[in-house]
Amino acid sequence: MRAARILAAAQAAACLAALSCQSVPGPPVPPRAADAPAGARNPFAVPPAANHQIAVSLDLTAAQQIVDALSKSSFDPADLERIKQLPAVSMTIADAAREAGAFDRDFEAAFDTEAKPAIYDLRGVRDNAAKWKTLLATLEARREEIARAAAQRAAALLPAEPPVSVRLNVLASFGLAGMADSLLVPAEPDSDGTLIVDLSRTLGEFAQESDETRIGRLLRVMAVDAFREAWSAYRQASPAWRTRDSSLGAMEPLLRVVAEAGPVALTTIDEAFFPLSVWLREPGSRSIGEVNRLAERLSEGEEDLQKRVEMQSEIKKQDFARRTAGPAGAFLADGILQSSGIEGLRTALRNGPKAFFAAYIAAAQKDRNLIPLSPAIEEQIQGAASTPAP
Image 1 (cartoon, one colour):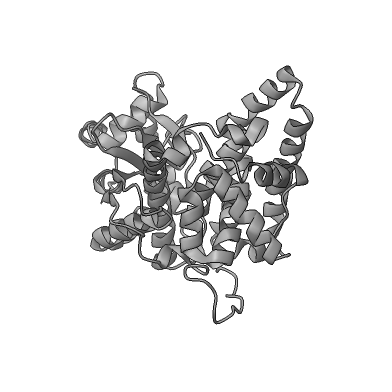
Image 2: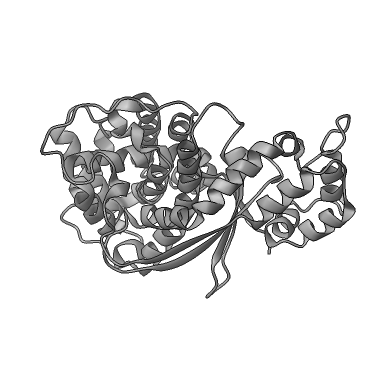
């Protein structure tokens, strides 16, 4: 089975992550009231609501062997053959689905300063092999600590019930094809998920930044996909998420995808940028504005079946979730978080899309600094408030 290529944490949140993953210090912490709700500043530092069984492991074998091989003075075919047998590398090659020998040629090209890689760019790894060895030694020493922290972050937003069980094996490597910095290999039934992380893209070039900054970035990438899997398992088990809520009318697909994608996008963001309404207000305004416009169009096209079907088809595309629904939903989730704390957000997520939007509307009524939703959305939610989901 071909793996489903995903954009990792930074790309999943589009405008939000473009800011949160920059290699610069975060903004200063804004002054907060002494009675700020629990988890409002950093929802990922709060203990999980329940004993969800979320396990994350980190395997550095492929990254270490690639760096060791590229550190040699000349290309060794034996190294190449051994490396191609590693799970992280074999799955990377299978996913790229390129002609036989493409990885071999690009691996050897890393030793030739005149050659240009066609698909798998490993030249930068060879050029910085000594620095990568040092960083990998640090990661190896803290490997279990990083995995535990990623698992805790992945469980932070989940409501207590129903409990979920997810295992994610993270394989660190180099040279993913294309532009993605990670590759999620979907789990077969009753098996663990696998995430391949390209360290050179995830951790960037060797600029002047601390090991803690780099570790934090890697940890977020790991946690995002662990949470993505756990959040999907949670929704499949939850009566509030399993079925379509007919009380939301034609807006149901739009409101659902925003409520589904928002928590995932929120997990990608560096804690330094909370609250989002202060530090990332402009991209939030753009993404929520797009959701508002779509909601108005869906409302206006209630009687036009063809128009409604076309819009709903666009809404269901992965690109819409990544570029618009995720960033907008992250701002809504953070607005609930700032107003009601982590338990308020968990309650909204537990009760489904309608409750998620209702909680944000209530938060916006208390805090005029939050970006307002369109009248069409507010009217639909308020009109549906007394109508139980089927």
